[in-house]
Length: 271
Image (cartoon, rainbow, N blue to C red; front, side):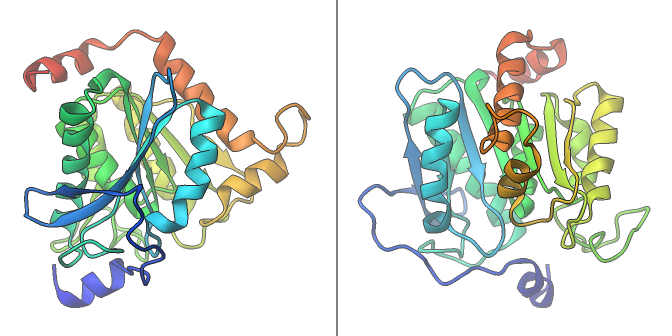
């Protein structure tokens, strides 16, 4: 990946946090050191493995996910990308994949969380490592918020993957064996909604699609707030509409048997 493309894709913000005692440190397979946080909810069944978007870091999301953990009654584990925040190294596509693999390894080996209770959740650029992980390892389900088909396809609606393109989710999503939940806004000016729709259509063909949540009028950066403003038909859920959709997906995972295809992936991985 050229330096120009790296500068275009990766926009790490100036670190928004210090050496918080709640953070701990992971070492990736590329020998980079990245911070992470783990929000544990007693008696929670699922753990969301969250991969954040571009131009944000752990300090910008931890408060929100404290609310998510409480309202959904889930554990939340999130990590920093190489070259972001207080991580070492330079951001690259391969580094992002090693980052989420290090987080997944920590969940399984240190926290002893079985794969059947891990749900990767990626937002924007974070959908790429989430899809990568679900393709390479068994997980119970995956949530993709505002996903891209690939980086080159954001400005150009290409039919084929060009050499040098990165985060080519469209070439990987068909190999994912677990249920996939796509969330996208119809007025997303950064990653147009057709990206999420294209990925969902592939999942439909592969039998892994969960009903998508396409938010009318939603843009890229504040779907959570827009969902709460738009969904006022049921006053009992007004203010929590976005999380209600995620909760429904998690309940679906809990109540639906694991597919034969996903079980074979787990067996092949030695899990």
